[in-house]
Length: 192
Length: 256
Image (cartoon, rainbow over all chains, first blue to last red; front, side, top):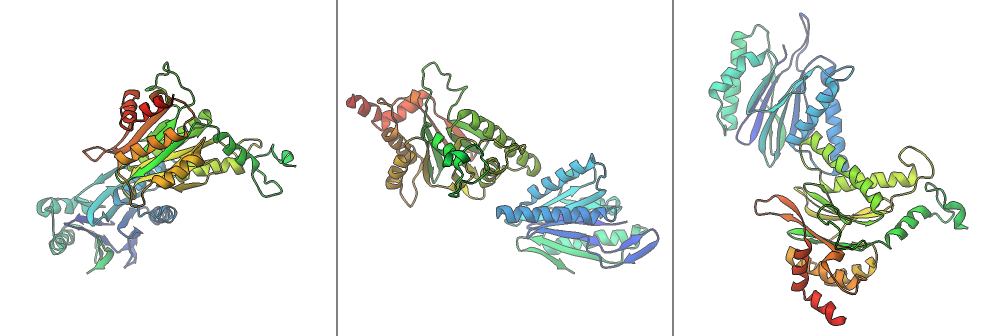
């Protein structure tokens, strides 16, 4: 049910995550933020097994913070993605693997945007646009059709809206609200 | 009085000293000199070999200079066997970082990792056995990373480290250090000048009456035209060329 979408633009990454928390047929909460800020320029968005998701995300968040404090360096997006993937790989063959799928959106190299798709089987791939959850079945084709390199923020927002409209039309699940964030050289901020 | 406290590495003396660490440093002061000079476009590592013979296969076996990873190399002063053990450890550390972050380990982090290990041996040892001695090695680390560019670090058996523009370890190191202090220019020097400076300083401190390419190891860490970091260990013939350039070969012959 949970949806994550990421779109890499000219000098930013646009992300959207649905804000619904549901268990079986009951919607327990609206307004949930399914992401954790790893450092100034990197955002981790997650979906999957409730509990595992937050545990994993916060574990990653704390480790990346520790790295920053120990070494006085902000970890770049690709290094973050490699680190997260490695943790996933180790978790996979452990007694209790993390059942978490994620997107990492970052702009650490002077605002150059990077988007990584990763899943619970420790796959990881850098992509220009990506989605997790059932949404992927619908929005990937929309983004295939309309994504171009060097999208401006307005253009990317329009593309994202096309994706969300597609879900409204064709996806059986009701996702009334999305939390939309932008990651760029100035950091992470929420936009409407 | 001190003797009673010698046998344990992990305890202080009444005066608050760690004798084993100091004895380790004493061992290093008898080892072949190694010096490093930081230039704006690279780093020079030069060292005096203790085991000298034309029969030594220099390309295969190195006594003083070792590659740690694609972007870091070290010069050693002290017990070679101890050094090998530490170098093995730090090479693994560099690769472990690479496999986790898919990036080269920042130089200072590598230095810190090794120093943490050395410090451990002054406090609790690897398998918590008593009676383990510290490593009798000092290192000069020459490395490059995208955060701070070219860097030169020095570490000693206590596990302390610091960053340097030019420094020296091993025999006659205080002598060499003062020469370096006089010669090194505050605003920085280029790699060519650093190479010449290294040879000049080494020639003044080396015991040998004749300065020869078989008595030293010489290397530079710099970037090639494509911007890739390369560690170049000079062959004996190449060292001869450098020495000739500095008129050092002739000078020594004149002294004879």
